[in-house]
Amino acid sequence: MQSELKILIVDDSLVYRKILIDVVKQIPDATVVGTASDGAKALKKLEQSAVDLVLLDVEMPRMDGLQTLKQIRARHPGVGAVMVSAVNQKAAEITMTALAHGAIDFVAKPRGQDIVASLTELQRALTPIVNIVNTNRILKSVSVEPMLLPLGESIIPRESHEDLSKTKELPVISLRERQPPRKFSVVAIGVSTGGPKALSELLSALSPELPIPVLVVQHMPEGFIKSLTRQLDTKSALSVREAKHGEVLNAGSVLFAPGGKHMVIKRNGRGLVVTLNDDLPVNSCRPSVDVLLKSLGGITQHAILSVMLTGMGQDGSDGVQYLEEYASYNLVQNEQTCVVYGMSKAVVEKKLADEVISLSRIAPRINELILHRGSRQ
Image (tube, rainbow, N blue to C red; front, side):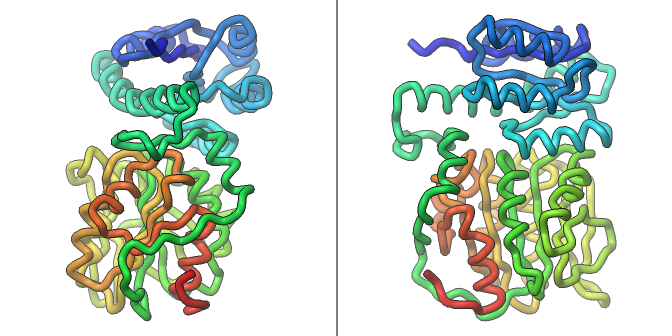
């Protein structure tokens, strides 16, 4: 019988340690094996006890979350870490850097004063992440190839994900024998868990000559996208930033839907224009990939190039299906290079994927399709 996932809680607030303990108690197959009030104490606990996952506060005295994460990755590479972040600019910046240094994901600390509501919100955010880590642990313990398991979402061990970038390139798989459109108006990207690292690789490889705008929906709560885009902008030849209500889409720009806002594109006399709204979540997501993709149907002069990357759930697949009524072409990240094979899998299962490609090939393929540099490989 598989043992429970062992979790260490690290937070300088006694109140928040208690809150997280109560949250973990509500998650099946997970148990708290210890707590620590700062990073230095957490490292000592890791030397003394078997731990599978650390819930790691971002802002702490003595040794903050990022410093602690680096030490965990160096000294205990088999232990996963999820950042638990306050919603402020400093914490958001540290959190985005932590994701780049190997944190599995993050959850935002609720800002309300209602303890019951905070517990519910944290449980909703943490449960799927804990399930991912637990599934990953089980897969590694039985040495079964993840893609062979009948899971709703196949989880690729992080170590395997990193090793794939160093191995020979995986082939492009064409699922629908149709030629791509000759011209595109927009690239639309959907991504969730594992997104910051995937986007860093993808956006850094896009051509500075790209003559059309790129739109991105990354599932994140309010307050974090601005920090993510600031970091990604330093790695890309294109202009990467958080979208603003009312701005016109321009070539050479990569616009992200703000956290907590749906991004809808409309056409007016100025061209294609961003509108942001607070409508109800779709697929439990706001922003939603489906909302963005459906807004693009019928308003562009040329085709839409949709790109579905790693992430939990199936947000985006309905939008891809909706665009079948219009000119579109669909690239999907393959299972082997996804951290979570959920969003991209949903597109494949609906038989809507035109090409299934490893992460390292997606940006070059976008460049080829948009700039007509070579045919399908």
